[in-house]
Amino acid sequence: MLAPKPMRHCYATIVGNRPVSEGYYELTIEWPRRAARPEPGQFLTLRVSPDPVPLLRRPFAFSGFDEGGSDGAPGHARILYERRGRATRALTAATPGETLDILAPLGNRFPEPGAGRRPVLIAGGVGMGPIFYWAERLAGSGAEIRLAADTGSRAGGDGTRNAGGSRNTTGTAGRAGGDGTGAGKPPVLAVGAQRGAIVPTELLPEGPELVLASDDGSLGTHGTVMDALGPLLAEEDQVELYACGPMPMLRAAHEAAERLGAPLWVSMEQTMGCAVGACMGCTVRVNDERVYARVCTEGPVFPSTEIDWASAPENA
Image (cartoon, rainbow, N blue to C red; front, top):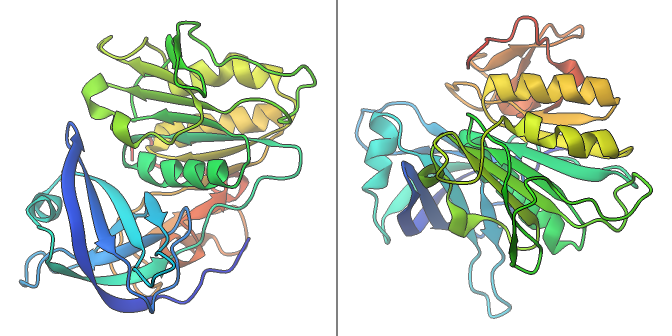
């Protein structure tokens, strides 16, 4: 895995901060010139307010990055976040022109898929952000991808869109090509939610075939994202999985990868204190001599085989 680039302590100007779906917001900041470009899977921490409360910085994964122009214009980084508690409620009130105290970029990134393997990207909840960024990067590089996203509840698929934007109602990701490998097959993006209103549809990356689902029937059909991917995965001989989201979804993705004998990279979500490896507050139990690994510095992206799933919380 690529070593992360050094972090920087910077001040970033807010360019935009807007609601994009029910409970979710997109924050856009002008990227400091002296900070390294953030990669898919990495994150930043920021001080929500200069006031003493909330005291600790809050971590947020990058959901996108736009390079600066040839005329010297700065780049822009994007963050998809959920309004959850006091800190994120305060963040929703931040306005363009204000500055944020940030540490970035932090953590490692998603590794490139192996030759001949079709990437299958699986997201849930706030995990949509980093997975959308990774999908955007893969699509931009000309790679064909399969992207599956689930906002942490039930997902299946009866509303789909092909890469050209037209709709169909097959209910499953169509299979192109017949050799079972990732070569020559169109990308697929499956998105599920408890309610369709949760999904920030305007932020979905361009290119993939889209499969939609929701618990309440307002967006596609029912079923978990792993249920929806079952038929597709059964037909694929060469895949590489990437997942970010709630623990039950990550555990199900790991079990599927084990059955397939396929690699899976999981981006772990943990509460963080310092986010620089000092406090040991974000550790996860792993299956090697370390016993515990720090999500902030040794992750957040890990091979799923490194995680001790038996000790992982059921509903984190």
